[in-house]
Image 1 (tube, rainbow, N blue to C red):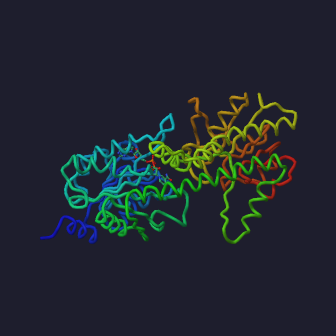
Image 2 (image 1 turned 60 degrees about the vertical axis):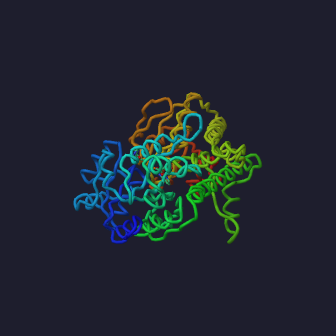
Image 3 (image 1 turned 180 degrees about the vertical axis):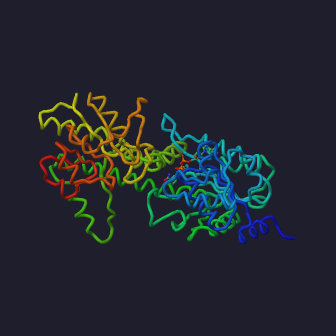
Length: 440
Ligand SMILES: NC(=O)c1ccc[n+]([C@@H]2O[C@H](COP(=O)([O-])OP(=O)(O)OC[C@H]3O[C@@H](n4cnc5c(N)ncnc54)[C@H](O)[C@@H]3O)[C@@H](O)[C@H]2O)c1
């Protein structure tokens, strides 16, 4: 007699297994497309009606996933989208890709993982494999998913169903490393869980890296993002120290980066943004509090990075002051609202903090971003990207470059401006020593 595991492995190997993706955002949609391309039938489930409607029409809303690809997968019946969670009853293999933000208090907001898990639990049946992709604290898969999907449904993990964690590493906007070719770490609740989940993911993704437990996989993601957050905190503090010392921080970093080993280049900026780096390490520091341990590196780097928008605004104020202009009443144009270059993602963007802080000081703030036509400031007001960039640059007392989008014509912006505060060294050599330019 063949076991539940053998049957599932067979379906995964010959790609007749139906795949469910819970959460069709920046992570879930590229993953759905990857499994669809590998030949699986995909059921995407998302409570967001607009996303579901858009997919039903064969349209993508994620820049990294082309509409032609979604249209092809939808038209061939390989991808269906719905907000009806009961569709998951047909699924053999399910990935959960829901948000993991922070609450106002800075604690993890597990409500999306909880509600997705509770919905999935209603559709659990023997012979399923479930993988959690959302970045979260170590222990989530075992403490939150396992009881709800297993014991409460009378299903034994590693026998009746298989459960694992696999962190998503996608870097939106990046073309060389994609969902398909970025190595994927996977750790199961039991060794059989790791084996089944790795076999499934290996059908669509180039390299799968199995680890021995779900906790190891959860923590590997937090290490990656904490590493970035701490190193960014370090160079941000270096920028602050360099300003006091009268040394060019960009030159120092470029010089250090010529070392062919033992150094990795990070650059300072206006603060952290996006859904990952400012948030994920705080999941770990929160978890460690239950173990009476303070994650000191994380807390320190978070403190430095969180204060960068305030530091930028104080430097803008000084730069204007040097020109005999008060920030109160000055016209400031913020260039770039997205949290990083060449993406349309504004989540946690330091631009919003810079805009809010400049306005608090009485500045008249406008912004331009080719990817973000409208935004809502922290106090809820809507702002529209200025329609004519160069006219706005000419009018501004100070242009503050917050996001260094590559499509900006920096020589023309420099030529047209009166004063530029460059938080990203977007102007490079053009800005160094230029009388109109102040760099972070
Ligand atoms: N965006 C990135 O670059 C990135 C990279 C690596 C890891 N991650 C992690 O992946 C996870 C997802 O991030 P994202 O950027 O895709 O978020 P997202 O907000 O773009 O997408 C999440 C989707 O989940 C849906 N959703 C909310 N509640 C749901 C529920 N109960 N059931 C089903 N769907 C639900 C939302 O409507 C949304 O469409 C997060 O934990 C994030 O930290 C994100």
